[in-house]
Every structure is written in C-alpha cells, then in structure tokens.
Image 1: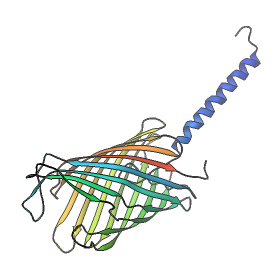
Image 2: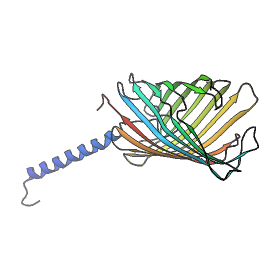
Image 3: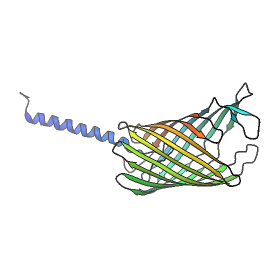
Image 4: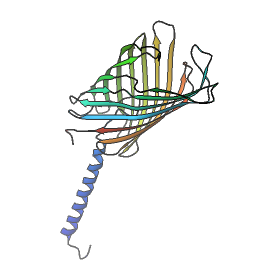
Length: 288
C-alpha cells in the first residue's frame, strides 16, 4: 500500500463493506413473499396484515396407455387430457396471525378418446362453479416449529351433466405444520377432514423442502386423499407424488412449477402426468 494514505484505504474498505451489506440486504428481501403454492401442503404462514396476495396457475393432466372402464357402460377410456385455469386464490391479512381467503372458480377443458374411437372428443366446462371462502390462523410459532389451521367452506355441484346439478356445500378443516431443520431445509405436512354431501373426505401429506439459494426452493411431497361414501359401501383413495420448485423473482413476485404423478388408486385411475405452472404477487404490505 505504498503511496496510498491509510485513511483513503480505510474509506475505500468502508465503502466496499457498505455496498456489500446493501446488496446482502437486497437479496434478503426476496424471502419476503410466502405462498401456499406450489405444494399440496399450504404454507403455515399468513399474509402480512392489510396486505393482499394473489396466487394462480394453469394445470395440464394426461392419462395414457391404460384402458379405464367407464362406469355403467361397456366403454373403455383410452386417453384423457385435462386443462385447468386459473386455479386462483386471493389471500388478505386481517392480523399478524390470521388471513381470510377467497377461491375463484376455474375453467376446465377436457379432451378424451374411447377405445373404439378414431378421433378425440371434447368437453368444455366454462366454470366448475366451485367457490371457496376460508380462514387461516397461526396457532403456534416457535423458532423451529409452526402450527396453523385452515377452515374452508366450498360450494360444489354433482357430476351429472344431464341434470340441473344440485348445489351443495362442503366444510374442510386442515391442520398444517412445519419443522425447520436448519436455515435451508424443512419438513412440513397437513392432515384434514371434509364433510361433503353423502361422503367424507380425508387427506394427508408430507413434504421435504430445501433452499437451493436465496431465490430457489425445491420440494418433494407425498399426498394421500380418500373419499368415504355414506349411502354405499365404497371408498376411493388416491396416492400421488409431486416434485415442485419455486423461484422468488422479487419481494412481491414468485413463479413455480410442479410435476406429479398418481402412484395408486382403487378408482380405475392409471398412473398419469400432471404439470402445473403458477404465479403469485403481493400487492401491498406494511413491511416494505
């Protein structure tokens, strides 16, 4: 450092340290947005008080290579593709521990082919008419473990296209937990119960997530869902495995992708491929 005054060197080092701290702080804010997407297991956290958050996405599901018997017919379904959008939920923080939620109906479009068909058939359901109103509350929060509850009331209609489709409501109750192994990894899960028309819905899931860097999360998740019908002695279950990743674009925006497959079911459902793309935006926050 000959020929360079010590105070100039000190000033230069101080300026470099200030710039480094500023950059580190700017990267830290990327962790601010926290979403329920892309996993089946929702986040244990709630949206900041007086903040509105949008989460939505598009889905594609294809079932191939296995003939599926169609109930009460002699037909077999050879291929089924389903497109869904926009899988939208709005979340609003009413306190530091509680948020309210609104699930918007989604558009569903299907393309399918029977075993005796040479051409595909199409089915358009402009809206599935399912609307959900929910409340998420953080019950317990420690340095490593967090527990939250989510209660959702959803409207639904029966699956008979030729009928008027009777409107009913289902009440869903979920417990969501998360245990942080360290600064980069966590395990989380959910277990829930739904009271539907003539049936009960049970679900459970567990995931392992790891932070690749300040912007990228990678998660693997196993999900179990089952329906228990009251009027008939028949229960159906579904087991799926999902791999998902989320990229934090900014403190207000995040994008995600999920790739999953049905591993097993007693409902004549073969293994499939499910792909979902999503986006989330935090409109406003007192913590900016």
